[in-house]
Length: 264
Image (cartoon, one colour):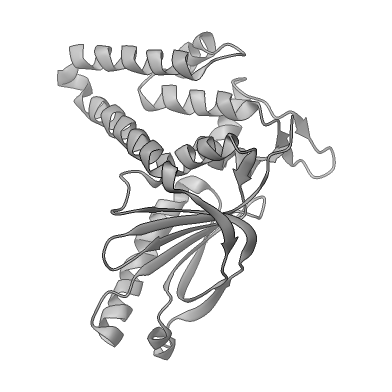
């Protein structure tokens, strides 16, 4: 069974959105603990959550999605629906051009991600010792805002102390049920001199996945979705603390611990 955080990550949506879909009957947890209220989902529900997210991204209303989605929706049918919506957007380009660009951007990101996934590496992840700042949010949808607030402060302090970009590390810890810890920092020991920053320890993992891009992907969320889809073939799922390392030369590396995907 998957926690609400794990299925939200696998589908590229927020826990808040999953709860909204549950409230209107689009998706329901397989189990709800009667004492804690924690939701647990079957592995087979990941595909449905991804399908709902994909259809919403291209402008389908929730009522229409409820009609379109059957219990056995396949990827080929989902692609057909996306292509059909692309045609509608072309006919309505004056009012829907922004949506059309988003569809094409996501398709390109997914294609690029699929190509890059040929270079994934499975193995241990080293612990990290960051110097930086942290923020706590209650939902995945707030991560971008937290990063936007923390990153300029790190860049400013880094420039003052070092005069050059030594690389930035982002981590996203969703191990808690109702909280997400966002960390932004650097691995440079020189930053230890800054009293406004603090040391952040990121534990290693015996089993993990690493994949690198020559340049930052257009959508980190889509990249994670493609990575999770690739790992499904190996019976694995990402979990725990997710890492994004941005080097000074633009190379971007994504890492996460992995565990076996239990059968539903």
